[in-house]
Amino acid sequence: MNGVAFMLPIALGMGLLGLAAFFWSLKGGQYGDLDGAAARILIDEDEGGDGHGEPDGASGTRP
Image (cartoon, helix red, strand yellow):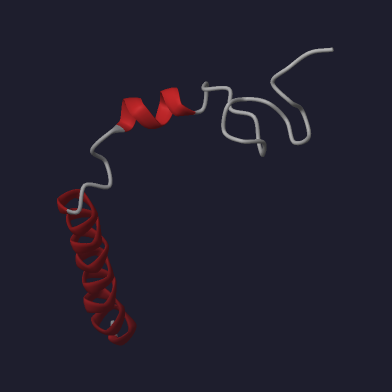
């Protein structure tokens, strides 16, 4: 019984702390754009280059 009286308030406090952290992230806009994050993974972007989709060292003209 002594252990339950010690652990129950700790468990309730941790649960309330987790609930407060969830509402804090909800208020901060953490879950605001779920569809945009899901679609962003499908966008094909090449790494490097000049930002126009060409790899490093490739020029815009062809021989």
